Image 1 (cartoon, rainbow, N blue to C red):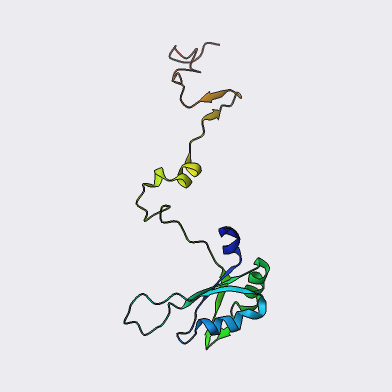
Image 2: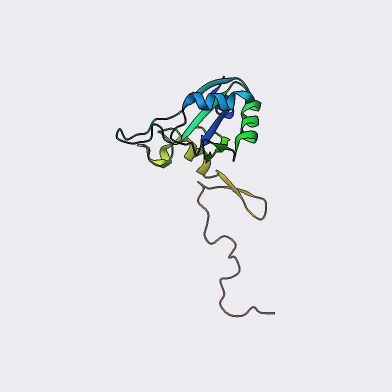
Length: 151
């Protein structure tokens, strides 16, 4: 299964109580389809009273099963808390976006999105290249005489 398909079949479950375990999540989400994996990220601080960070990812075999779980479990009560269940988003690459060690303009995604067009079309339908030197006096012919026009 490709990474894109995996993320489409993965559900984000937020707002979990601190007593919830991965077995509880497995039991709650198994009615909607075959589950491949349940990830319950641990809390970062070692002295934290919470055993996990309050959210989880449930990966299904099929994308339709994930949609069914979202439809049925979003805004439902689970261990005294209201769940926020939605489509999981793929994590951003460490080499892309803000916070990476690469300059933004050196990243492939930024270049593709912000690349200047090579050609512009004028009002007459002519195609001018951005690289060509444009005469700043073009179109000013006949304006070399000051004052009002002679009738």
